[in-house]
Amino acid sequence: MGLNIALVGTGAVGSTILQVLDERNFPVDGLKLLATERSAGKKVTFRGEEYTIEKTRPESFEGVDVALFAGGKASTLFAHEAVSRGAVVIDNGSAFRMDSDVPLVVPEVNPQAIREHKGIIANPNCSTIQMVVALKPIHDLSPIRRVVVSTYQAVSGAGQEAMDELENQTRALLAGEPLEVSVFQHQIAMNLIPHIDVFLDNDYTKEEMKMVNETQKIMGVPGMKISATTVRVPIMRSHSEAITVETADKISRDEARKAFGNAPGIILQDDPAGNVYPMPFFTSNTDEVYVGRVREDLAFDNGLSFFVVADQLRKGAATNAVQIAETMLEFGMLGGQS
Ligand SMILES: NC(=O)c1ccc[n+]([C@@H]2O[C@H](COP(=O)([O-])OP(=O)(O)OC[C@H]3O[C@@H](n4cnc5c(N)ncnc54)[C@H](OP(=O)(O)O)[C@@H]3O)[C@@H](O)[C@H]2O)c1
Image 1 (cartoon, helix red, strand yellow):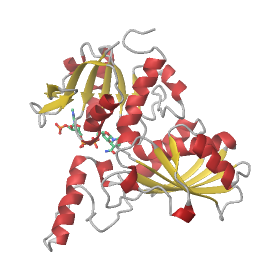
Image 2 (cartoon, protein in one colour):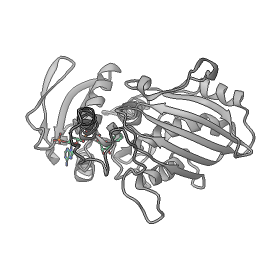
Image 3 (cartoon, helix red, strand yellow):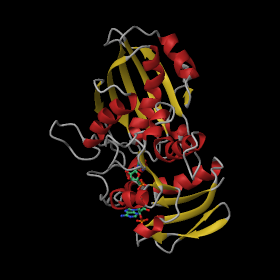
Image 4 (cartoon, helix red, strand yellow):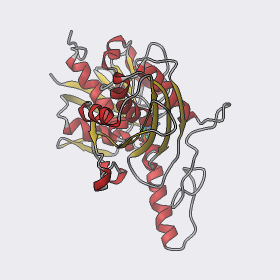
């Protein structure tokens, strides 16, 4: 069975969604590529056929089974228009994630939440997705009480223009020329910026509070204590996270390594003696969440620390969205299946 797909947004995440749909042989019958006037008219090739990007309009969603949104503000403007025309929306933006009637889904963690959807399913924030995939096998061994996480986030997390900015600044810096700063608050080349999204009243950033609130919702533990520090670093792709958790009961390093090794979607890369641990340069363009540096933590009695890396354009966005659609197919919930 083939599906009629609309993709809203053809930037960093949108173009990766096309790649992932193709690689995973997702059954696409019809495809509409939608963006703003800026990209309208551009040609994109998918499975050997050429498609023309169109400006997004409410009528664009007529006859669409699944609308994959990767278009920033497009979600608030058009998601309900798509749903009212019978499409299921899988949204990469943050607008609906905390709505009580919108499932927030990472298929390795809470696939059953999909069954409760009322038209819109949200993809979590990229930093949240890779963290919850790693938290799940630990939480299954013993409930997690507390999480402390620091992130090292690639510039592609801020979209195509941010990738261009790092490249241009690095070239200018090496050539001894003046730098232009427009996407980030400060120069990102040869720097890091402990500031992603806006600061809130509690002195955390919105990105940090997304990691708190979304993790609690996905894990189904509203009281889980989480503190995040999110930092932008001058690499192109793949976010890294240093995570410390406190669990109800003690989990040994070996038990944790075994749980990570057996968990869906995780590749354990943990051989300190052989200098083996996850690194963003090597995880880019892959779909798994890589876990290493697993150790019993010195600051918490029942504590574990580990390092988690994943390609946030793929598992943190495109792949997770396509996995949600695949799970819906498995559940018989798409394109008139039932
Ligand atoms: N980058 C990541 O790692 C990441 C991870 C998870 C989630 N996300 C989320 O995914 C979404 C896309 O991010 P991105 O990194 O792909 O951004 P991007 O590279 O800047 O691309 C944005 C795309 O959205 C389109 N768009 C913007 N406003 C629109 C509107 N009002 N109507 C229709 N299309 C519109 C743009 O159209 P034009 O081409 O015409 O300008 C462009 O194609 C954002 O909500 C972002 O927060 C990003």
